[in-house]
Length: 581
Image 1: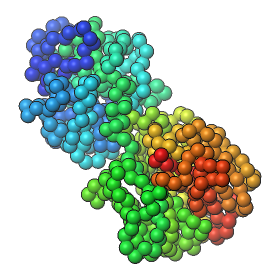
Image 2 (image 1 turned 120 degrees about the vertical axis):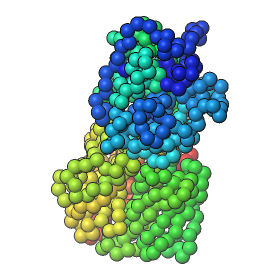
Image 3 (image 1 turned 90 degrees about the horizontal axis):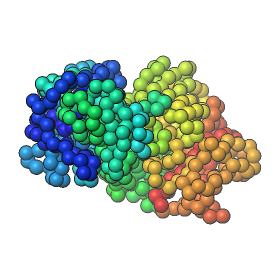
Image 4 (image 1 turned 30 degrees about the vertical axis):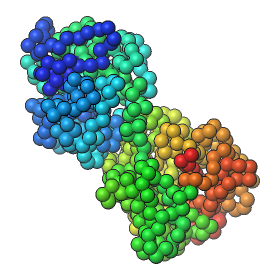
Protein backbone atom coordinates (compact mmCIF):
# COMPACT_ATOMS: atom_id res chain seq x y z
CA UNK A 1 0.00 0.00 0.00
CA UNK A 2 2.45 2.60 1.11
CA UNK A 3 1.72 4.38 4.02
CA UNK A 4 2.15 7.55 5.49
CA UNK A 5 3.62 9.81 7.71
CA UNK A 6 1.56 12.75 6.86
CA UNK A 7 -1.51 13.50 4.87
CA UNK A 8 -0.90 13.97 1.17
CA UNK A 9 -1.32 17.71 1.51
CA UNK A 10 0.92 18.01 4.57
CA UNK A 11 3.56 15.74 3.08
CA UNK A 12 3.81 17.75 -0.09
CA UNK A 13 4.11 20.86 2.04
CA UNK A 14 7.00 19.31 3.97
CA UNK A 15 5.06 19.24 7.25
CA UNK A 16 6.05 16.65 9.81
CA UNK A 17 3.52 14.21 11.19
CA UNK A 18 3.00 13.82 14.90
CA UNK A 19 2.76 11.17 17.55
CA UNK A 20 6.56 10.85 17.76
CA UNK A 21 7.78 9.13 20.94
CA UNK A 22 9.44 11.43 23.43
CA UNK A 23 13.09 11.93 22.62
CA UNK A 24 12.76 10.69 19.03
CA UNK A 25 12.89 13.31 16.32
CA UNK A 26 11.60 12.75 12.80
CA UNK A 27 12.56 15.15 10.02
CA UNK A 28 10.28 15.97 7.08
CA UNK A 29 11.06 13.92 3.99
CA UNK A 30 10.17 15.22 0.55
CA UNK A 31 8.93 12.67 -1.97
CA UNK A 32 11.96 13.20 -4.18
CA UNK A 33 14.25 12.27 -1.31
CA UNK A 34 12.89 8.74 -0.88
CA UNK A 35 15.50 6.12 -1.59
CA UNK A 36 15.50 2.38 -2.30
CA UNK A 37 12.88 -0.05 -3.47
CA UNK A 38 9.30 0.97 -2.87
CA UNK A 39 7.16 -1.83 -1.52
CA UNK A 40 3.48 -2.02 -2.35
CA UNK A 41 0.69 -3.27 -0.19
CA UNK A 42 -2.19 -5.52 -1.17
CA UNK A 43 -5.38 -4.27 -2.83
CA UNK A 44 -8.35 -4.69 -0.52
CA UNK A 45 -11.11 -6.85 -2.09
CA UNK A 46 -14.09 -4.81 -3.23
CA UNK A 47 -16.62 -4.33 -0.45
CA UNK A 48 -14.17 -5.21 2.33
CA UNK A 49 -13.87 -2.81 5.29
CA UNK A 50 -16.97 -0.77 4.32
CA UNK A 51 -16.40 1.41 7.39
CA UNK A 52 -13.06 2.70 6.02
CA UNK A 53 -13.15 6.29 4.77
CA UNK A 54 -11.26 8.18 2.07
CA UNK A 55 -11.07 11.92 2.75
CA UNK A 56 -10.64 14.19 -0.25
CA UNK A 57 -11.12 17.77 -1.34
CA UNK A 58 -14.02 17.48 -3.76
CA UNK A 59 -17.46 15.90 -3.98
CA UNK A 60 -16.33 14.45 -7.30
CA UNK A 61 -14.18 11.60 -6.04
CA UNK A 62 -10.88 10.90 -7.72
CA UNK A 63 -7.38 9.95 -6.71
CA UNK A 64 -6.30 13.46 -7.70
CA UNK A 65 -7.76 15.03 -4.57
CA UNK A 66 -7.10 12.36 -1.94
CA UNK A 67 -6.17 13.96 1.35
CA UNK A 68 -6.28 11.45 4.21
CA UNK A 69 -7.93 8.23 5.33
CA UNK A 70 -10.20 7.53 8.28
CA UNK A 71 -12.74 5.29 9.99
CA UNK A 72 -16.53 5.57 10.27
CA UNK A 73 -16.97 5.25 14.04
CA UNK A 74 -20.59 6.34 14.51
CA UNK A 75 -23.43 7.28 12.16
CA UNK A 76 -22.29 10.56 10.58
CA UNK A 77 -18.82 10.64 12.20
CA UNK A 78 -15.29 9.92 10.97
CA UNK A 79 -12.16 9.43 13.08
CA UNK A 80 -8.93 10.59 11.43
CA UNK A 81 -5.67 12.41 12.25
CA UNK A 82 -5.64 15.95 13.63
CA UNK A 83 -2.85 17.01 11.29
CA UNK A 84 -5.15 16.40 8.31
CA UNK A 85 -6.80 19.69 9.31
CA UNK A 86 -4.35 21.28 11.74
CA UNK A 87 -1.03 20.65 9.98
CA UNK A 88 1.25 22.12 12.64
CA UNK A 89 -0.82 20.71 15.54
CA UNK A 90 -1.19 24.06 17.27
CA UNK A 91 -4.88 23.50 18.02
CA UNK A 92 -6.05 26.06 15.48
CA UNK A 93 -7.27 25.47 11.93
CA UNK A 94 -5.79 28.44 10.10
CA UNK A 95 -7.12 29.96 6.90
CA UNK A 96 -4.30 28.26 4.99
CA UNK A 97 -5.35 24.86 6.37
CA UNK A 98 -8.44 22.80 5.52
CA UNK A 99 -11.74 23.45 7.25
CA UNK A 100 -14.38 20.76 7.74
CA UNK A 101 -16.52 21.97 4.85
CA UNK A 102 -13.60 21.74 2.44
CA UNK A 103 -13.32 18.02 3.05
CA UNK A 104 -15.53 15.22 1.70
CA UNK A 105 -15.79 11.67 3.02
CA UNK A 106 -16.16 8.68 0.71
CA UNK A 107 -17.58 5.68 2.61
CA UNK A 108 -18.51 2.09 1.83
CA UNK A 109 -16.47 2.38 -1.37
CA UNK A 110 -13.30 0.28 -1.61
CA UNK A 111 -12.52 1.73 -5.03
CA UNK A 112 -12.79 5.50 -5.24
CA UNK A 113 -14.06 5.32 -8.82
CA UNK A 114 -16.87 2.88 -7.97
CA UNK A 115 -19.84 5.24 -7.89
CA UNK A 116 -22.27 2.30 -7.91
CA UNK A 117 -21.95 1.95 -4.14
CA UNK A 118 -21.35 3.98 -1.02
CA UNK A 119 -21.76 7.63 -0.17
CA UNK A 120 -19.79 10.84 -0.55
CA UNK A 121 -20.68 13.35 2.18
CA UNK A 122 -19.34 16.80 2.92
CA UNK A 123 -17.82 17.56 6.30
CA UNK A 124 -19.61 19.94 8.63
CA UNK A 125 -17.49 20.34 11.78
CA UNK A 126 -14.10 19.22 13.07
CA UNK A 127 -13.19 18.46 16.68
CA UNK A 128 -9.47 18.39 17.47
CA UNK A 129 -8.09 16.21 20.24
CA UNK A 130 -5.05 18.44 20.92
CA UNK A 131 -3.48 15.79 23.15
CA UNK A 132 -3.08 13.05 20.63
CA UNK A 133 -3.01 13.39 16.83
CA UNK A 134 -6.70 12.61 16.41
CA UNK A 135 -9.68 14.48 15.02
CA UNK A 136 -13.38 13.75 14.64
CA UNK A 137 -15.16 14.95 11.52
CA UNK A 138 -18.93 15.42 11.78
CA UNK A 139 -20.63 14.92 8.43
CA UNK A 140 -23.22 17.30 7.02
CA UNK A 141 -25.84 14.63 6.25
CA UNK A 142 -26.67 11.16 7.57
CA UNK A 143 -24.46 8.24 6.63
CA UNK A 144 -25.46 4.63 6.27
CA UNK A 145 -22.07 2.90 6.05
CA UNK A 146 -21.34 0.28 8.71
CA UNK A 147 -19.39 1.50 11.72
CA UNK A 148 -16.25 -0.06 13.14
CA UNK A 149 -15.63 -1.06 16.74
CA UNK A 150 -13.06 0.91 18.72
CA UNK A 151 -10.56 -1.03 20.81
CA UNK A 152 -10.46 -0.57 24.58
CA UNK A 153 -6.86 -1.83 24.83
CA UNK A 154 -3.81 -2.10 22.60
CA UNK A 155 -2.59 -5.42 21.20
CA UNK A 156 0.48 -7.12 22.67
CA UNK A 157 3.99 -6.71 21.28
CA UNK A 158 4.43 -8.82 18.13
CA UNK A 159 0.67 -9.04 17.60
CA UNK A 160 -0.43 -8.64 13.99
CA UNK A 161 -2.07 -5.37 12.97
CA UNK A 162 -3.32 -4.20 9.59
CA UNK A 163 -3.13 -0.59 8.44
CA UNK A 164 -5.31 0.38 5.48
CA UNK A 165 -5.80 3.49 3.39
CA UNK A 166 -5.55 5.23 0.05
CA UNK A 167 -2.03 6.65 0.45
CA UNK A 168 0.75 6.90 -2.15
CA UNK A 169 2.03 3.63 -3.59
CA UNK A 170 5.36 4.95 -4.87
CA UNK A 171 7.84 7.84 -4.66
CA UNK A 172 6.27 9.50 -7.69
CA UNK A 173 3.13 10.39 -5.78
CA UNK A 174 0.89 7.76 -7.40
CA UNK A 175 -2.38 7.38 -5.52
CA UNK A 176 -4.37 4.13 -5.85
CA UNK A 177 -7.97 3.86 -6.92
CA UNK A 178 -8.32 0.80 -4.68
CA UNK A 179 -7.79 0.88 -0.93
CA UNK A 180 -4.54 -0.84 0.08
CA UNK A 181 -3.61 -2.81 3.20
CA UNK A 182 -0.39 -4.13 4.68
CA UNK A 183 0.90 -6.64 7.22
CA UNK A 184 2.52 -5.10 10.28
CA UNK A 185 3.35 -6.19 13.82
CA UNK A 186 3.29 -4.26 17.07
CA UNK A 187 6.71 -3.31 18.43
CA UNK A 188 5.67 -1.28 21.46
CA UNK A 189 3.74 1.73 22.70
CA UNK A 190 3.86 4.81 24.86
CA UNK A 191 1.17 6.80 26.64
CA UNK A 192 -0.29 8.16 23.41
CA UNK A 193 1.01 6.08 20.53
CA UNK A 194 1.13 2.55 19.17
CA UNK A 195 4.35 1.53 17.40
CA UNK A 196 4.38 -1.03 14.60
CA UNK A 197 6.65 -2.13 11.79
CA UNK A 198 6.23 -3.85 8.45
CA UNK A 199 6.35 -7.64 8.25
CA UNK A 200 7.26 -7.65 4.57
CA UNK A 201 8.15 -4.55 2.58
CA UNK A 202 4.99 -2.47 2.85
CA UNK A 203 5.27 1.02 4.23
CA UNK A 204 2.81 3.77 5.00
CA UNK A 205 2.79 6.93 2.89
CA UNK A 206 1.10 10.27 2.22
CA UNK A 207 -2.69 9.92 2.10
CA UNK A 208 -2.79 7.14 4.71
CA UNK A 209 -2.76 9.62 7.60
CA UNK A 210 -5.67 9.04 9.93
CA UNK A 211 -6.31 5.64 8.38
CA UNK A 212 -7.24 2.68 10.54
CA UNK A 213 -4.71 0.37 12.15
CA UNK A 214 -6.79 -2.59 13.22
CA UNK A 215 -6.93 -6.15 14.47
CA UNK A 216 -9.38 -8.91 13.57
CA UNK A 217 -10.55 -11.50 16.08
CA UNK A 218 -13.33 -13.91 15.19
CA UNK A 219 -14.23 -11.80 12.21
CA UNK A 220 -14.72 -8.68 14.33
CA UNK A 221 -12.54 -5.71 13.43
CA UNK A 222 -11.27 -3.36 16.14
CA UNK A 223 -9.45 -0.14 15.31
CA UNK A 224 -6.55 0.20 17.72
CA UNK A 225 -4.92 3.35 16.28
CA UNK A 226 -5.19 6.02 13.61
CA UNK A 227 -1.98 6.12 11.57
CA UNK A 228 0.01 9.35 11.96
CA UNK A 229 3.69 8.88 11.07
CA UNK A 230 6.14 6.61 9.26
CA UNK A 231 9.88 6.20 9.78
CA UNK A 232 10.93 6.85 6.19
CA UNK A 233 8.03 8.31 4.29
CA UNK A 234 7.23 5.98 1.39
CA UNK A 235 10.44 3.98 1.54
CA UNK A 236 10.97 0.54 2.96
CA UNK A 237 12.19 0.98 6.51
CA UNK A 238 12.83 -1.17 9.54
CA UNK A 239 11.87 1.67 11.87
CA UNK A 240 8.60 2.07 13.71
CA UNK A 241 5.47 3.50 12.15
CA UNK A 242 3.33 5.42 14.61
CA UNK A 243 -0.40 5.58 15.23
CA UNK A 244 -2.38 7.55 17.77
CA UNK A 245 -3.92 5.13 20.26
CA UNK A 246 -7.70 4.86 20.20
CA UNK A 247 -8.07 3.33 23.66
CA UNK A 248 -6.59 6.33 25.50
CA UNK A 249 -8.79 8.67 23.45
CA UNK A 250 -12.06 6.81 24.13
CA UNK A 251 -13.28 9.19 26.88
CA UNK A 252 -12.80 12.11 24.48
CA UNK A 253 -14.47 10.27 21.59
CA UNK A 254 -17.45 9.33 23.75
CA UNK A 255 -17.79 12.90 25.02
CA UNK A 256 -17.97 14.23 21.46
CA UNK A 257 -20.23 11.44 20.12
CA UNK A 258 -22.41 10.21 22.98
CA UNK A 259 -25.47 8.04 22.46
CA UNK A 260 -28.48 10.29 21.85
CA UNK A 261 -31.81 9.29 23.32
CA UNK A 262 -35.11 10.51 24.67
CA UNK A 263 -38.21 9.00 26.22
CA UNK A 264 -41.70 10.03 27.34
CA UNK A 265 -44.66 8.69 29.23
CA UNK A 266 -47.73 10.03 27.43
CA UNK A 267 -49.94 10.85 30.40
CA UNK A 268 -52.63 12.95 28.70
CA UNK A 269 -53.98 10.72 25.91
CA UNK A 270 -56.96 12.93 25.02
CA UNK A 271 -55.32 16.35 25.41
CA UNK A 272 -56.74 18.83 22.91
CA UNK A 273 -53.49 20.81 22.67
CA UNK A 274 -49.81 20.00 22.74
CA UNK A 275 -48.45 19.36 26.20
CA UNK A 276 -45.26 18.68 28.10
CA UNK A 277 -45.43 15.17 29.58
CA UNK A 278 -44.57 14.53 33.22
CA UNK A 279 -40.93 15.47 33.74
CA UNK A 280 -40.54 12.59 36.21
CA UNK A 281 -40.93 10.16 33.31
CA UNK A 282 -39.49 12.15 30.43
CA UNK A 283 -35.90 12.72 29.34
CA UNK A 284 -33.91 14.20 26.46
CA UNK A 285 -30.15 13.62 26.34
CA UNK A 286 -29.59 16.96 24.58
CA UNK A 287 -31.36 18.87 27.31
CA UNK A 288 -34.10 19.85 24.88
CA UNK A 289 -37.80 19.80 25.64
CA UNK A 290 -40.13 16.88 24.89
CA UNK A 291 -43.71 17.65 23.88
CA UNK A 292 -46.64 15.52 22.73
CA UNK A 293 -49.36 16.47 20.26
CA UNK A 294 -52.55 14.47 19.60
CA UNK A 295 -53.09 14.47 15.82
CA UNK A 296 -56.30 12.42 15.88
CA UNK A 297 -57.92 9.57 17.77
CA UNK A 298 -55.06 7.34 18.90
CA UNK A 299 -52.56 9.21 16.74
CA UNK A 300 -49.73 11.22 18.33
CA UNK A 301 -46.54 13.08 17.55
CA UNK A 302 -43.76 13.17 20.14
CA UNK A 303 -41.30 16.02 19.52
CA UNK A 304 -37.83 15.72 21.06
CA UNK A 305 -35.92 18.98 20.58
CA UNK A 306 -32.27 18.65 19.59
CA UNK A 307 -32.45 14.98 18.62
CA UNK A 308 -33.41 15.46 14.98
CA UNK A 309 -31.67 13.11 12.54
CA UNK A 310 -32.68 10.56 9.91
CA UNK A 311 -31.43 7.59 11.90
CA UNK A 312 -31.90 5.78 15.19
CA UNK A 313 -34.58 3.48 16.54
CA UNK A 314 -37.99 3.84 18.21
CA UNK A 315 -39.68 1.47 20.67
CA UNK A 316 -43.22 1.91 21.97
CA UNK A 317 -45.46 0.10 24.44
CA UNK A 318 -49.02 0.80 25.57
CA UNK A 319 -49.41 1.75 29.22
CA UNK A 320 -52.19 0.92 31.67
CA UNK A 321 -54.52 -1.92 32.57
CA UNK A 322 -56.35 -2.07 29.24
CA UNK A 323 -55.95 -4.34 26.20
CA UNK A 324 -54.85 -1.41 24.02
CA UNK A 325 -51.76 -1.76 21.86
CA UNK A 326 -49.47 1.04 20.65
CA UNK A 327 -46.82 1.06 17.94
CA UNK A 328 -44.32 3.20 16.08
CA UNK A 329 -45.78 5.01 13.06
CA UNK A 330 -42.62 6.73 11.85
CA UNK A 331 -39.94 9.17 12.94
CA UNK A 332 -37.69 11.76 11.40
CA UNK A 333 -36.18 15.21 11.79
CA UNK A 334 -38.03 18.47 11.64
CA UNK A 335 -35.08 20.83 11.72
CA UNK A 336 -33.18 19.86 14.85
CA UNK A 337 -36.23 18.22 16.44
CA UNK A 338 -36.89 14.49 16.24
CA UNK A 339 -40.58 13.86 15.56
CA UNK A 340 -41.74 10.39 16.62
CA UNK A 341 -45.20 9.26 15.52
CA UNK A 342 -47.25 6.78 17.55
CA UNK A 343 -50.56 5.03 16.86
CA UNK A 344 -52.70 3.22 19.42
CA UNK A 345 -55.50 0.70 18.88
CA UNK A 346 -57.95 -1.37 20.84
CA UNK A 347 -57.44 -5.11 20.89
CA UNK A 348 -60.06 -5.29 18.11
CA UNK A 349 -58.10 -2.85 15.93
CA UNK A 350 -60.01 0.43 16.39
CA UNK A 351 -58.02 3.63 16.90
CA UNK A 352 -58.15 4.66 20.55
CA UNK A 353 -56.68 7.35 22.77
CA UNK A 354 -54.26 5.62 25.07
CA UNK A 355 -51.44 6.14 27.50
CA UNK A 356 -48.11 4.93 26.12
CA UNK A 357 -44.35 4.89 26.62
CA UNK A 358 -42.06 5.82 23.71
CA UNK A 359 -38.26 5.74 23.52
CA UNK A 360 -35.96 7.05 20.79
CA UNK A 361 -32.32 5.93 20.66
CA UNK A 362 -29.37 6.68 18.37
CA UNK A 363 -25.99 5.02 18.83
CA UNK A 364 -22.89 6.96 19.80
CA UNK A 365 -19.24 5.96 19.39
CA UNK A 366 -17.01 3.68 21.41
CA UNK A 367 -19.60 1.61 23.27
CA UNK A 368 -17.66 -1.56 24.15
CA UNK A 369 -20.84 -3.57 24.70
CA UNK A 370 -22.90 -5.50 22.18
CA UNK A 371 -25.74 -3.44 20.74
CA UNK A 372 -27.83 -3.27 17.58
CA UNK A 373 -31.03 -1.96 16.10
CA UNK A 374 -32.86 -2.08 12.80
CA UNK A 375 -36.04 -1.13 11.00
CA UNK A 376 -37.41 -4.13 9.10
CA UNK A 377 -38.77 -2.33 6.05
CA UNK A 378 -39.44 -5.14 3.53
CA UNK A 379 -42.07 -7.35 5.21
CA UNK A 380 -42.64 -9.75 2.30
CA UNK A 381 -39.03 -10.11 1.08
CA UNK A 382 -37.38 -13.49 1.69
CA UNK A 383 -33.99 -12.06 2.64
CA UNK A 384 -32.62 -8.52 2.61
CA UNK A 385 -30.45 -5.89 4.21
CA UNK A 386 -32.77 -3.42 6.00
CA UNK A 387 -32.47 0.33 5.53
CA UNK A 388 -28.93 1.22 6.58
CA UNK A 389 -29.97 4.69 7.77
CA UNK A 390 -31.90 2.99 10.58
CA UNK A 391 -29.59 0.03 11.18
CA UNK A 392 -26.71 -0.21 13.64
CA UNK A 393 -24.36 -2.96 14.81
CA UNK A 394 -21.73 -2.15 17.43
CA UNK A 395 -19.41 -4.87 16.07
CA UNK A 396 -19.48 -3.41 12.57
CA UNK A 397 -21.48 -6.27 11.06
CA UNK A 398 -24.21 -5.74 8.48
CA UNK A 399 -27.63 -6.63 9.91
CA UNK A 400 -29.93 -8.69 7.69
CA UNK A 401 -33.51 -9.99 7.88
CA UNK A 402 -35.01 -13.20 6.52
CA UNK A 403 -38.68 -14.21 6.26
CA UNK A 404 -39.41 -17.94 6.56
CA UNK A 405 -43.23 -17.79 6.58
CA UNK A 406 -46.05 -15.28 6.90
CA UNK A 407 -45.20 -13.06 9.87
CA UNK A 408 -42.15 -15.15 10.82
CA UNK A 409 -38.80 -13.37 10.67
CA UNK A 410 -35.22 -13.71 11.79
CA UNK A 411 -32.79 -10.83 12.24
CA UNK A 412 -29.10 -11.62 11.91
CA UNK A 413 -26.72 -9.42 13.94
CA UNK A 414 -23.26 -10.63 12.87
CA UNK A 415 -20.27 -10.23 15.14
CA UNK A 416 -21.97 -10.85 18.47
CA UNK A 417 -20.55 -13.72 20.49
CA UNK A 418 -21.72 -13.21 24.09
CA UNK A 419 -24.86 -14.95 25.33
CA UNK A 420 -27.50 -12.76 26.94
CA UNK A 421 -28.78 -9.25 26.44
CA UNK A 422 -32.27 -7.88 25.98
CA UNK A 423 -34.50 -7.48 22.93
CA UNK A 424 -37.38 -5.07 22.42
CA UNK A 425 -39.61 -5.22 19.32
CA UNK A 426 -42.32 -2.84 18.16
CA UNK A 427 -44.55 -3.12 15.11
CA UNK A 428 -44.32 -0.20 12.68
CA UNK A 429 -46.91 1.50 10.49
CA UNK A 430 -50.51 2.65 10.46
CA UNK A 431 -52.27 -0.71 10.83
CA UNK A 432 -53.26 -2.45 14.07
CA UNK A 433 -50.74 -5.29 13.62
CA UNK A 434 -48.44 -6.14 16.51
CA UNK A 435 -45.07 -7.90 16.81
CA UNK A 436 -43.09 -9.65 19.52
CA UNK A 437 -39.81 -11.41 20.28
CA UNK A 438 -39.92 -15.15 19.56
CA UNK A 439 -36.39 -15.92 20.75
CA UNK A 440 -32.77 -14.90 20.38
CA UNK A 441 -29.27 -16.36 20.43
CA UNK A 442 -25.79 -14.93 20.25
CA UNK A 443 -26.28 -13.22 16.89
CA UNK A 444 -29.87 -13.89 15.77
CA UNK A 445 -33.29 -12.71 16.90
CA UNK A 446 -36.60 -14.32 15.94
CA UNK A 447 -39.66 -12.10 15.55
CA UNK A 448 -43.36 -12.95 15.09
CA UNK A 449 -46.08 -10.56 13.91
CA UNK A 450 -49.90 -10.88 14.12
CA UNK A 451 -53.06 -9.07 13.01
CA UNK A 452 -55.90 -8.09 15.34
CA UNK A 453 -57.46 -11.56 15.08
CA UNK A 454 -54.19 -13.15 16.18
CA UNK A 455 -53.27 -14.53 12.77
CA UNK A 456 -49.70 -14.30 11.44
CA UNK A 457 -49.24 -11.26 9.21
CA UNK A 458 -46.44 -9.71 7.19
CA UNK A 459 -45.73 -6.25 8.54
CA UNK A 460 -42.99 -3.73 9.29
CA UNK A 461 -41.26 -3.71 12.69
CA UNK A 462 -38.45 -2.16 14.73
CA UNK A 463 -35.95 -4.11 16.81
CA UNK A 464 -33.44 -3.02 19.43
CA UNK A 465 -30.89 -5.28 21.13
CA UNK A 466 -28.78 -4.26 24.14
CA UNK A 467 -26.27 -6.21 26.19
CA UNK A 468 -24.99 -4.95 29.56
CA UNK A 469 -26.48 -1.50 28.88
CA UNK A 470 -29.83 0.17 28.26
CA UNK A 471 -28.84 3.38 26.46
CA UNK A 472 -25.10 4.01 26.59
CA UNK A 473 -22.36 2.19 28.45
CA UNK A 474 -22.71 4.34 31.56
CA UNK A 475 -26.49 4.76 31.87
CA UNK A 476 -28.25 3.39 34.95
CA UNK A 477 -31.01 0.87 34.44
CA UNK A 478 -31.89 -2.80 34.21
CA UNK A 479 -33.43 -5.39 31.96
CA UNK A 480 -34.81 -8.90 32.36
CA UNK A 481 -36.38 -11.74 30.44
CA UNK A 482 -39.19 -13.31 32.47
CA UNK A 483 -38.26 -16.97 32.03
CA UNK A 484 -41.01 -18.42 34.28
CA UNK A 485 -44.57 -17.30 33.51
CA UNK A 486 -46.47 -19.48 36.02
CA UNK A 487 -44.64 -19.46 39.36
CA UNK A 488 -45.78 -17.12 42.11
CA UNK A 489 -42.22 -15.85 42.46
CA UNK A 490 -39.10 -16.40 40.41
CA UNK A 491 -35.74 -14.97 39.46
CA UNK A 492 -35.55 -14.23 35.74
CA UNK A 493 -32.77 -16.04 33.90
CA UNK A 494 -29.43 -14.68 35.08
CA UNK A 495 -28.12 -15.03 31.50
CA UNK A 496 -30.71 -12.55 30.30
CA UNK A 497 -30.95 -10.03 33.08
CA UNK A 498 -28.70 -7.11 33.96
CA UNK A 499 -28.67 -4.41 36.64
CA UNK A 500 -26.34 -1.42 36.42
CA UNK A 501 -25.66 -1.59 40.18
CA UNK A 502 -25.05 -5.33 40.16
CA UNK A 503 -28.28 -6.24 41.96
CA UNK A 504 -30.73 -8.98 40.96
CA UNK A 505 -34.13 -8.43 39.35
CA UNK A 506 -36.88 -10.66 40.77
CA UNK A 507 -40.42 -11.42 39.58
CA UNK A 508 -43.80 -12.21 41.12
CA UNK A 509 -47.09 -13.38 39.55
CA UNK A 510 -50.24 -12.21 41.34
CA UNK A 511 -52.74 -13.72 38.92
CA UNK A 512 -53.19 -14.90 35.37
CA UNK A 513 -51.04 -12.76 33.10
CA UNK A 514 -50.28 -10.27 35.89
CA UNK A 515 -46.67 -9.76 36.95
CA UNK A 516 -44.36 -7.47 38.86
CA UNK A 517 -40.60 -7.12 38.39
CA UNK A 518 -38.63 -5.62 41.28
CA UNK A 519 -35.48 -3.64 40.46
CA UNK A 520 -33.54 -2.97 43.70
CA UNK A 521 -31.70 0.27 44.33
CA UNK A 522 -32.98 2.28 41.35
CA UNK A 523 -35.61 4.98 41.83
CA UNK A 524 -38.99 4.80 40.12
CA UNK A 525 -39.18 8.52 39.39
CA UNK A 526 -36.96 11.40 38.28
CA UNK A 527 -36.68 10.59 34.58
CA UNK A 528 -37.40 6.89 34.28
CA UNK A 529 -38.95 4.72 31.57
CA UNK A 530 -40.06 1.10 31.20
CA UNK A 531 -40.67 -0.96 28.04
CA UNK A 532 -42.03 -4.46 27.63
CA UNK A 533 -42.33 -6.89 24.72
CA UNK A 534 -44.11 -10.25 24.82
CA UNK A 535 -41.94 -13.31 24.19
CA UNK A 536 -42.75 -16.56 22.41
CA UNK A 537 -44.49 -17.93 19.33
CA UNK A 538 -48.11 -17.34 20.38
CA UNK A 539 -50.16 -14.23 19.59
CA UNK A 540 -50.07 -13.00 23.21
CA UNK A 541 -49.01 -9.40 23.82
CA UNK A 542 -47.92 -7.52 26.94
CA UNK A 543 -48.15 -3.95 28.27
CA UNK A 544 -46.61 -1.99 31.11
CA UNK A 545 -49.43 -1.21 33.54
CA UNK A 546 -47.35 1.00 35.85
CA UNK A 547 -44.07 1.40 37.66
CA UNK A 548 -43.63 2.79 41.15
CA UNK A 549 -41.51 2.58 44.28
CA UNK A 550 -41.34 -1.01 45.52
CA UNK A 551 -42.27 -1.80 49.11
CA UNK A 552 -38.68 -2.91 49.74
CA UNK A 553 -37.23 0.09 47.92
CA UNK A 554 -36.13 0.42 44.35
CA UNK A 555 -38.67 0.12 41.54
CA UNK A 556 -41.54 -2.24 40.79
CA UNK A 557 -42.53 -2.55 37.13
CA UNK A 558 -46.01 -4.04 36.66
CA UNK A 559 -46.89 -5.93 33.49
CA UNK A 560 -50.03 -7.55 32.09
CA UNK A 561 -50.18 -10.00 29.17
CA UNK A 562 -53.24 -10.83 27.07
CA UNK A 563 -54.33 -13.17 24.30
CA UNK A 564 -55.76 -12.22 20.91
CA UNK A 565 -59.21 -11.77 22.44
CA UNK A 566 -57.87 -9.40 25.07
CA UNK A 567 -58.18 -11.82 27.99
CA UNK A 568 -55.37 -12.05 30.52
CA UNK A 569 -53.02 -14.93 29.78
CA UNK A 570 -49.73 -16.15 31.16
CA UNK A 571 -46.83 -15.21 28.92
CA UNK A 572 -43.10 -14.75 28.97
CA UNK A 573 -41.83 -11.25 28.17
CA UNK A 574 -38.78 -9.00 28.10
CA UNK A 575 -38.54 -5.75 30.05
CA UNK A 576 -36.10 -2.84 29.83
CA UNK A 577 -35.91 -0.05 32.41
CA UNK A 578 -33.87 3.13 32.14
CA UNK A 579 -33.21 6.03 34.47
CA UNK A 580 -31.17 9.19 34.10
CA UNK A 581 -29.90 8.93 37.68
